[in-house]
Length: 273
Length: 285
Image 1: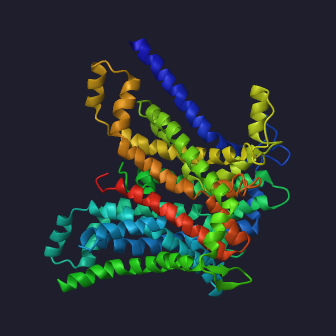
Image 2: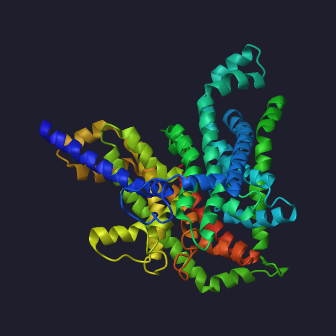
Image 3: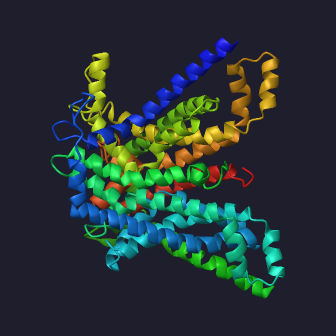
């Protein structure tokens, strides 16, 4: 019996390692290639002299720095705004008897699920005519709209978990609504709020479609910047991989941070872990 | 009571007005544009012309077929592999949380990066794919992205790599809630693992499975990066999905009216999928 268990455990381990390897190969390949010279990129010998040239080159590239900064700016600002406005809506939905609440809130969610192309043409034309094309403001507005439904849904789940009795007790003690929010609701749901904000940041940082159609050379975000590597006649794979990795690292760190909330976040709270 | 109402609106109105301006209004504008002959050269009302032209256009049906292919095979294979991995990860073993972090990576890194890494691996002369085939199996590879026979599978594979982990994690969350007693009882009654899986596990997980499948279907329907970066819909029309077709119409050929019409058709399909999803989306989850 013990022997059978050991064999079973060994099989499980082998399978797990195989699965993990299979899903890790493309990422591993990016990492390895980013340390290779142009000549070594397609040399498959496992040992090579790792070089940092690709990173040095890409980090000195003015356009890459600019795109990176653009992504950071847009992601941080739009996340903060979406969280601010979204908190109000989700608190309202959680605590007030809003008419036709569930239909309305599902309608809000469906705004996030429809294909972006449905709203892309109006935004493109509008932004061109009122000067928001290739601007921070335009991108921030788009990404606030993009993330609001998500924030409203996910935050509402966290606010629902704050016992309403606690809020009422604070109110009886003479707290105004704002003070109740500040000293009761927000502190209790704080980890949820942070997780939601981090997920918003990830969504904006990873976003490609709107950034592609609504920006030019000035406010291009870094995902579009990385994509532009393949626009040239000869692709510098090494540099592209170094850039890809630099773009992915903050997201990997954030992703690991919020891994407990990742699935409930990506399913808009349909699943609670 | 009145003060409470004012308070309620103060909380929800800013967000709702913002959403109205940035979602509902553009959608209405797309409706309006879909009835117009609108490009760089012209902008005039032309009734149902765009719709009639679209439904007569052979490329529309090819794109529809490709979209269907993409969605069915990507989501179907993600479900089968995802379930297998979920069952594996439902066993107890040391280092599970580390393994889960690795498994999570494909779905959190930017989709652009995933598509680019596959673009590199698919490279016909120098890519990893053909190299592996040649050294391990001694067969010559293919020009994955430019061969009409393989192109659609090549882009579907990117989706599978990227999103199988999502399906796995959703199903794994479901597996953990299954009542252990029911399983034990069935085992004592002499049912083997396969019987238990098909007659108990699948039945009890029906709702979660539907959530996973529908979320993936909604997303796969609008897949963009995996195709745009690798093939841009080619070779010929081989990987042109509705989404790519609409993008090309609107932003490559600047035919805004036609692109809007196609977008509206997509809006209908996607609204239908979302309505189905809603049924499985109760708060009790």
